[in-house]
Image (cartoon, rainbow, N blue to C red; front, side, top):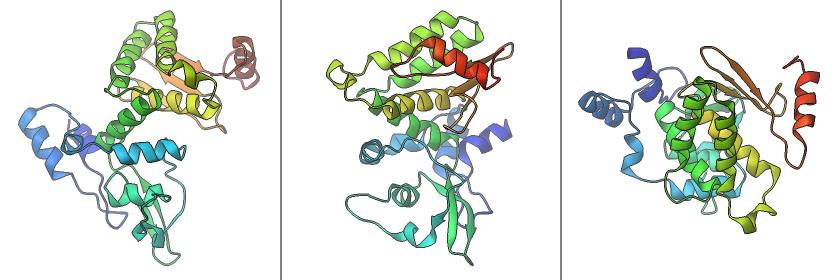
Length: 236
């Protein structure tokens, strides 16, 4: 239980070493007794979500070097979205090197990451209500019950909410964002890891009894996806 509380509400750092709890969320958790996204109830990051989507940013590279000088920069057009995310508390210091003038940033905890990803997935699905999370929960239940057909149906429903007139204009990155965010949120319910383009496959999900390797293709056949996974040694 204590480790779960740490994962959900600890993690803010001002020097890259010591970590602090979010007192508002921690006190609410102690009062209610369940893990909730309390901090996000104080405000909706609509402008940040829309800016991240406009600049094709839906994931955070925690190993990217960020100049320290950029952390204090701000402009109305929000061109440096990472600095704004840091300034508003959505990112915190993972590591810092004053001598070489760089740092690395990360989500402070599960509360912040899961909440921001829920807003992002609904934005990519053009949903005004929080509809992404229920689908993720349904998918976790389907995976745990080994209902592959239901998993496929849920993935299709994630894409089906994109308005018809936007289907043609949507790039592969748009669908990749939906896949990444869906499986990143899924990691709160089953063990899920979404790899980058350098990884072995698009998504790997592990339940108590099975390991699922998923490969997604835009305008290509399922046969090509299977052959790609076989070539990579993911499946036999």
